[in-house]
Structure formats: C-alpha cells, structure tokens
Length: 444
Ligand SMILES: [Zn+2]
Image: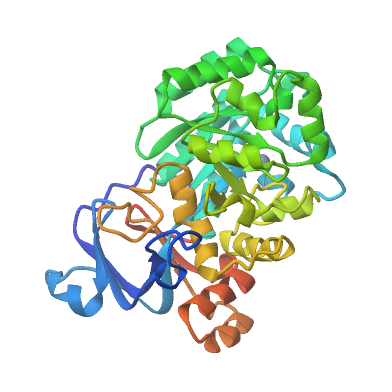
C-alpha cells in the first residue's frame, strides 16, 4: 500500500477462518509438548481492531450474525504478527553491503547512509517504504532505530500511524565517535527526545524508546541524560546495542574504565530494567546474564547480522537457562542483517543455535518471533498471541508459496514440521496476507 490516512477502525464484527497456530506458553521453560496451541479449522472473531474470540470454526460460527464478512484462508496457516525486536529503518538501502566488520561497517557504510536523513523528504520516503516492507514480510510490530535527526523519528511514527501499526522507536542519541554531522549533544539529545515523547508516546499504538546508539558513541553526560529520561518516564522503552563484538567490548572497557563490565555502563546510568532491549549480547558473561534476568531486561538476538558481520555466535541456551532465563526475541538488524523476513531470521537462528550446541525447536523459533519479543517489550497483554482482547495483528502463511515450499510442506507430518519448513524456506513470498489491527493490508 502507499502512504495514506490512518485507516478507520472497523467496528463491525468480522472474521478470519483458517488453520491457527500460536503459543500458549514459553517452550524454553514450560512443557514444550503443550506449548503450541492449534485449531485445525479455526476462526478469529474481531472488531474495533481487537480479537473478540478465537476457537474452532464449529464452535464459533453460530456467533456470526448473517452477512458477517469472513476471509477464508483455506490451506494456509495463521500465526500472530511477527515482532522484529531490533531493526534500523535508515539502513534498508544498505542491506548486503559486504566487506566489513562492525566498527568499519559503521564508519564506511552506516554513517553515510544515515547522513542522508538530514533531508526530511528522504526520511519520509524511506519510512513509508520500510513500513510497507514490514507488512509485506508479515511483521506487525518492530522496535526501530531511526537516526539522530528528530524529523526521522517523526517520519517513522507518521508512517506507522498511517498504517495503524503498533511501533516502538526513538531518536538516536550520539554525541561522540561519529561524523560531526551526525552528532547531537547531551542537552540536544535530552530535549529532542523529550519533545518526541510529548508528540508521539501513547499516540495510537506508538511507544517511545530512549535510544542511545551504544556506549562508545555517547559521553557519560549523554548517558546520564538518557537515564534522566528513563527515571522521569519509567514506562518508556530503552533500546541500544550491547556486546556485539570483542573489539567493541574492549573499546567500551577503555572508554569506561571504572565500570565492571559493558552492561554495567548502562546499569550505572539507570538504563537496565523492564522494557530495556539490548541488541546482540553475544559476548556476555554469567554475571551479565544474571543481571539482565534480575532486572527484567531483554536481548534481541540478530542471527543474520551476527553472521554477516562475523560478530560471533549468540549463546541462546545460556541466555535462556532455566535458573535465570533472560527474555530473548529475534531482531532482523537490517541493514547489517540480511533480510526483513522473520521467517528467514528464525531459520538462521536455528543454524546459529546448532553451532552453539542447542537444537532450536519450531515452537521455540515461533516464540522468538512472536511471544518472546512481545514479553521483551512488555506488550504481551496486547500482541504476540491469538487471544481475546489482543490486537488483531496476525499473518497468513502460504505453505505452497513456491514449488519447493509446496513440495516440502506436503511432506510435513505435523504443524511443528510445517513451521520448520516455513522457517527454512520461507520469506516474503510465503506471506499470503498481513492483518494489522483487524484490517487486511494490501501487498505492496
Ligand atoms: Zn543494530
């Protein structure tokens, strides 16, 4: 779809019929055998952008008044809308720019791309394209990095609002170790963020995230300003990067010699707690995992990015250890990530988990793409499952989207195996439809 006015919420009852699949609970911690909830021939009733009821078609069909519109997705699989827990909208134009490790990638690829966002028209065009692409890939909510320019955050929120999407984003705070044209100051970052919070947080389905890029590009004064915002608005999200590479981790140690570890830098400034999401978390020790767990903070695991930049192997099983399970969700981390597809990202998470000695089950992969990130964002009472009272955000997957997928999925003996095939072979071609707040969004 192209940019448009915010769609009016559909208050009439409508319904979607098909094979439904979602998670009852966390398959890493609770009985994995009963984690997947399924309705072979299911029905979702919705009105006003919310799910009214979910169950079998046989049980619910009598609730439909005559003439109620029903979208019947025969042969398809309906799952909760995907939640991308870490992505940079300013970097969609540099996916696959090869030849770098993290710190060179930032200097030679990322920063030049972000400089172009000084032009508000460019920001608006990319934001609209990005939101359309999320929908095309079945992603209905994302935690998004913008750029240092306040109008780039306005542009993203405007585009999300025009599509009624639940979106979490914030202005990048960055006052050192980057090109001069991308730097703010501690004071500017504080005041610009404050103005954006006033303008956007809580508007429609929008949430503001305090967004220092990462410790090396913020002075202690700026991190203090970020912490002051968090203290003043404790409901806000915090979104930053943590322990992606060893070079970066060593750099942080030299910049903040008084802090015990990388995580302690953020902790010192009051930035570690519920709704704090740290991208990567590859090079963390036991104490840092424990502190993340105890504080209620979360990690965004970004497998395609970690592979593309050669950053390292995320230790998923260690992060989710039963005695102190850190909340984890998947992020595409585009542009270092190589796909906006959460299907493809889950497929790569499986391979990275293999390298770290963990067999990621299809239910666990679905958790990392739906309920896990919803919990990381503190929004699991609204998104991440097919449940009454939740936002009517869901995705219709087509197991016959390509000849190879069709052949493979015909052999699938269970819904878990079907999911596994979709994670391995699926991408935006496998998204038959995306429903955002109950509205079927036209493909773009
Ligand atoms: Zn990132």
